[in-house]
Image (cartoon, helix red, strand yellow):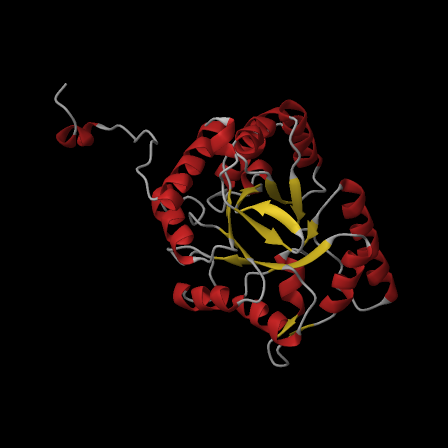
Length: 286
């Protein structure tokens, strides 16, 4: 893609910050495959700051400048830094730290230190990770315990608060209680992989949400073809919502970008198809 086309990738707003509607996922950078321990080990073995920078560079050159994940991991920090230096473009970082969810003063102080570090590392949006957020969801009372305090801590440090969750009802509870957040994370894919409710219910919750929603796992961690997974997500979310895509090579990054552009622009994809002997029946004779 040329510079002109890179400016066209759709954007949306989280609070007062413009972000790309495609978000660079980091699970594969860190060896979280949702496939097997062997696949996780392979990813950890091959990933390096330089390889991560190779992947991020592809996204940055296409106008996709928003990245989400564990900002505090040095591997991710170094990869982002190298990609920024190569391209002269800055990443907008959405960080998902694990926080101490205890009620006592010591736990709150520990969480404040985590947010201090997030601010020092340059996070723009901070969304306590699902393992922290969902532990605080009280289904009986339909509220998220102490999250208002955490949101205030994040605001006080000049960052935007959001909610990372695997429970779509968390979004409904946040909206109903007027929680001071700017965005949400929701698992959303055509396979229903890791989804707490059926896709049609999650679809309704996304469309009813008061703030933009960041969808994750669009290809169900490799269980769906990119065209199928991305086609479903881009076609069924709002123009203000986002899709997070994890890749493990620069070529994979190019593929998901090209497929996404073709879906959004309703044009034919230019991605090279897989070639196997069985495909010879639909291709030109050798």
